[in-house]
Each structure stands twice: as C-alpha cells, then as structure tokens.
Length: 364
Ligand code: GN1
Ligand code: MG
Image (cartoon, rainbow, N blue to C red; front, side, top):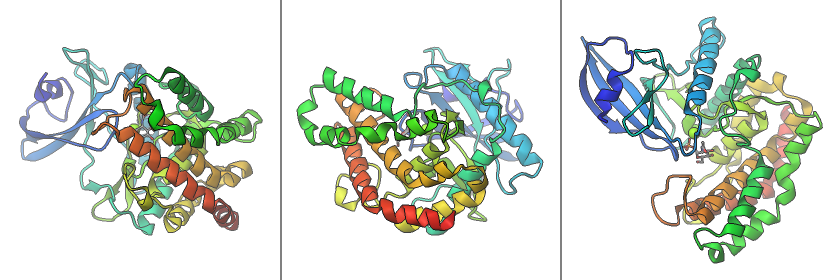
C-alpha cells in the first residue's frame, strides 16, 4: 500500500492536505520508520509512520494500548507542569478510532507526530549525557504512580537475563545456521558469566529491588534533544514499556552511551568505556531519580551496566546462531560483529567496576 493511502486513514489536524514527500528514518533494528511531509494550508506538517515488526511484537494491538495509556498519563503530568521543557509522543487515532492501520498484507502501521526542531546527539558530550540521564530519570519518576497492572507484557521476559542465557543455550544446541564453530570463544565468554545473569532477578525475588514501569530500550537515540536549547525534551520509542527494573533502564543507557565505539564497530580496539560520560549520566539520572531508588538499586547501578551489556551481546550471539531471524542486519556477520563489541565492552566495564562503585557511593 502507498504511504499516502495509509496516512489518509489517520485523523490528522486536517483532512485537507497534500502529500509533499517521504524519506526513511533509519536507525532502529526492528521496525521500519518513515518521515512523511504534508502541506496543510500554510503549514508544512510532518508525521512519523512506522510499520510495527510483528515477528518481534506479536501483540501489536496491546503494544499500542500500552503506548496510548503511558503517553496519556505522562501528558497529563506534563500539562500540569511536572517537567518543564519536556514533551511526549503524540499518537494519531484513525478515523474509526483505532491506534493503527492494517494494510492489505496484514502489516500494522501507526502514526506519530514528528517532534520538530529536534535531534539526537551523534557524538554526545558530558552535558548531553547529564541531560539524557536526567530525562530518563524523570521519565521513570513520572511513571512512578502509573498503575502497572494496566500494562500488557508485550514481550515476556524481555530483560530476564537468565532466560536470555537459556535462549543462547538452545541456539547452541540447535545450531540452526551451522555457525557454531565460529563462535567458540564467544560462547565460553558468556558461559563464564552465567551466575551474573540471575543476580538482579534474585535480588528482585528477595524483595530488595522493586518492579516498576520501565522503558526497556534506553539508547541515547531514544531521547530527542531540542535544537534551540540543546535540552533533552522527549523520550521516544515506547514499544517496550512494560513492568521491569529501573536498573535495566539505567544499565542499558550506559551500555550504549558508555561505548566509545559504534555498536557494530568491527575493530574492537575502538571499544572502551567512557568514564566521563558514565559520571555525567549518573549525576543527571540521580538528580531526577535518587529519591525513588532503594539502597540496593543504588548499589547495583554499576553492575547493571555490565549485565545489560552482557545480555545484549548474548542476544546478538543467539540471533547469529539462529540465522539472523530477529535483528535487522546489513551484512552476513553483522550480529557477530555486534556481539563482539558488546563482549569487549563487558571486559572494559569489569575492569572499572570498582571505580564506578566508588563514584556512585560518593554521590549517594
Ligand atoms: C533493538 O530497534 P531498536 O534499535 O530500538 C532492541 C533492543 C536492543 C537494541 C540494540 C524490541 O532496539 O532491545 O537493545 O536493538 N529492541 C527490541 O541496539 O528487541
Ligand atoms: Mg526499540
């Protein structure tokens, strides 16, 4: 189906618009994202149209319900002045009141307002890191009293690292793509860290870490910054909002931000852990979220970075063994390259864990 025809089915600001054009919005590993431009009277209005990957998100209707509930809840608080300068995503309904359009091939499409005058920092500074930490900390605080039981768990066990470890063991046993011989070292690397995989889960089961409403995909490019003020203004990519641990969001953010190289750098010598960005992000995050966190959560902040990095590496490795059925790849060993950067980063984090723990203890 044509993009225009899909957009026609959404209830936009006006029905009287002309299509100006479309382009890809690259970056994500899962959904397909497009920017559509329209002329409405004197205004140019832009929309983000996304095809939801239903191989990954098997319950697109529930997923959209989560996003509608969460954005509605956050918007109310923002309108009441909760976090000046922040905004949230705007989901457009269709003319018949749904949050999505189903195309002739059964594809699910949704439409967001494009966040104008925004960018995502490509080479983040310490100021950017502080602001991103503050934005994700604020996001968590805003959702502190959200009724979690209303949320669907759209991908069960999403950050259950012990389950991720089991999925890796299954992928090894199946050897579906016949690649087992290439990844002996990576498998040994993960297996040597098996006990780490259940540490946070055990603390959660013991009641030392609470379950909260979490974002679950806190990469830096999921915070948009304002071009005029350079402040972080909108947390985006709300697909994985589910009950989870605050430590997943904190750890995953630094997995991404703390890496001095790209997530798919082939030369792992480039992969180091950026302590100044860690320090800045942590300060910003704690400025917004410290009061909500328990002592155990605070103590486990540095470990969570290691855990989320290990988990992400295991997920790339699992997908490589399975024959690349989950993450979008751009060349044959892309998932293996991604796995290797993550595992190199785990080593870098392990070497600095004590230093990081001392830093957090000094702030708390
Ligand atoms: C995927 O599509 P994207 O880039 O927002 C993945 C995250 C991973 C990330 C690694 C639903 O996110 O969990 O951390 O890639 N999302 C899903 O870059 O699996
Ligand atoms: Mg995502």
